[in-house]
Length: 330
Image (cartoon, rainbow, N blue to C red; front, side):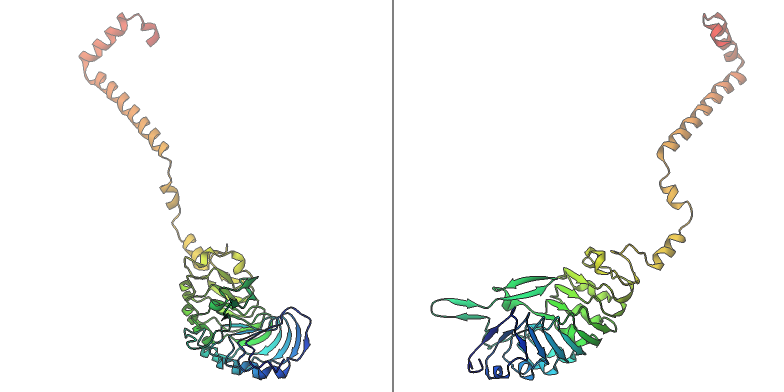
């Protein structure tokens, strides 16, 4: 296979291949896509892969690779898809990932896109099955527009590099099921095109940055089972997520979780007693109060006139005496 020096795309996913990746593949000088996912490859990720500057897609998920993520991967300025999930990689996430210009707003101008090849008789498009937003989907026509990093289900440790949040063109970031610690940087708000973010099942602490409310394209979020605390940021997007996206953080509060924040409970206890009741006083009660008052005023008005005016009083009783209904007034 190493004799295929003009090979541009290598896809051997979902087989039972094992052992190290053949070193002869480094003779493929124009390789743009390598997909060896769902196999049993082991050992460390070969250095020649992360030094092949023509690579656009590195898809090595679900194997048995171990060791660190080589920092030379940051030199791949055309890289759009980096999927190393479900391996046994350890160490920290390279801080230089912001050098990957294809994910940081740069364009691969002048680079021959291996995902689409035009021939005299037809056009050929590479396809790839990617796990984005928690489900496997085949990407073909839109593969050339996908920008993603998936390092989930490894043994990575340390903090999440601030630099990774400067990759503004990326649409999906999955760092779940690792041993990452530290806080989520405020810089996360700069990933304006981010659609999917999964940081679940780590040891991340601190508050969720308010800048996350700026991620207007975000429609898949999972921050569950960390050590996050404080109020969930208020934003038109964040409050629409399922509470399951935030469970497993004992000190987290606010919508969409049912748990109120301490300051909210203090405001409720400080409210004057009866204020709310007065606002909802039944209108029907005022009706009866008015009717009763009117009755007594009218009654005393009539009685008062009869008491102070002698002529009226004699006339009134004369009418009663001559009336046939007199017995009824007794």
